[in-house]
Length: 317
Image 1 (spheres, one colour):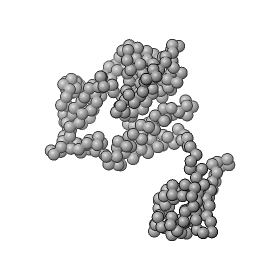
Image 2: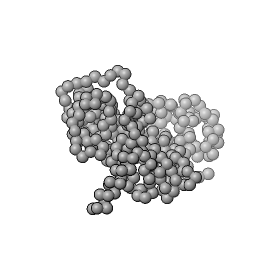
Image 3: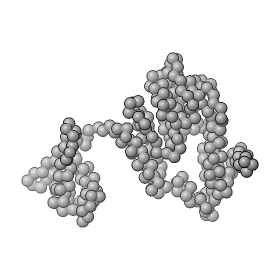
Image 4: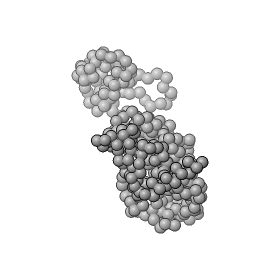
């Protein structure tokens, strides 16, 4: 039997849910379940109940009862208390999940990403003084924290907002007056889901494309029928009527890596064809160029032409 800290942690993680039902359990039986003898389990239980250097006023110690008949029970209230994680703890969990994703097989990526997005939503609901210098575990910049605070304040208070916003692929910004219905974190980016007065419809505004946020005196009321799940049924910030498709073929040289990342299966010849949601031609060009000759744009034609024009500019430079 291993006596390492990892082995003890494994036993304790089994013991806590096993004993925390308020019932008395036979100690020898519990020890057999974790593959340890009675004395080892007693030491494990003692380590749960005895803590050193705990600050005054901290959560009370775990209450464990051991009777003369070898029965053990744990007061369950300790585990039923609702917990509120701090900002730092939430961020640490998000970072840990990002690192875990890189180590796990492709079939587990969807579950990990789902957990990360729920953490992002929890972080977005923190009070302003808890948001602090929150960082997201992504390679790309997720946008200005100050503008995120302003949008969250408008969302809470029901004030309209004037955005200075740059659409994907455009260098000049335009002004939009929006009513923020929700602030969401998905696919590594913050978005304002808002009614846009210019387009007279619900649109997604990516935070890293927002140059300025101005809270207006005018107020709005969010429709009772509005639901984030309705406008993001697949968890992605695309509207069905606006979404286009980028269809790419990755060569066998890189297809296996792409397949693992996307949770796909390569073809018999080792290549991989994937359809990506396309809302930004400029993003598509950058994505294609980073893989050089190992990716081919199958459709749409406009992206293929945009890649060709970008390559011409590069070769003339």
